[in-house]
Image (tube, rainbow, N blue to C red):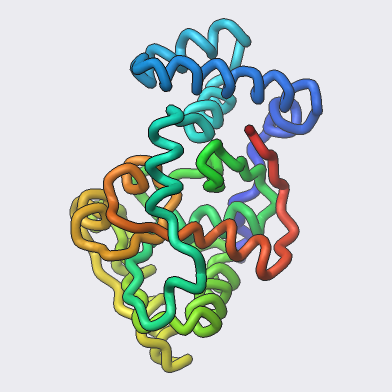
Length: 237
């Protein structure tokens, strides 16, 4: 029986469940952003700040995901589109980024809102993708958005090197066929580079993609608001 979900890790409640821990993390993010805005390297900055606040590995992961320099934040905001901008447009969706984040959110895992307004989780693909109980619901939520926003076409991009990427591609395409949705799905060896260089509008919360793409849309933020999703959200800034 498949009872898999992407819920919290053991210890997450200790690291993120109290106001004291959240306040400490927020101060750490402020310090990290100060350093990044003065051109300190991300790795060195996160080590320095991590040591100062005695952060655990997963807390440092949150710190890095939530932080960006002032220049990066401004640059990302300048390229961000509203839902009203998407009508009759072709969107390229960062498949694993969006799916895993939605699965985590629907599983009750902690989700963190960063300085750029994007939401990030603590799950990762780690070389293999396993479908979970929330996968279907995540795809349905994307479909609802696709129809309401009157998007012309949605192209899902998955990492070819990840095992089971072909399987999730088929799941998405079968769902699209059943529901008569104008969707495509492609496997790419370097999806980040592909999304940054080949998409008019990227749908992702991956920092590198946001820094390098021409335009992007914050789908997770939109779905949380629009669908009133019940989520374990922590605002980091």
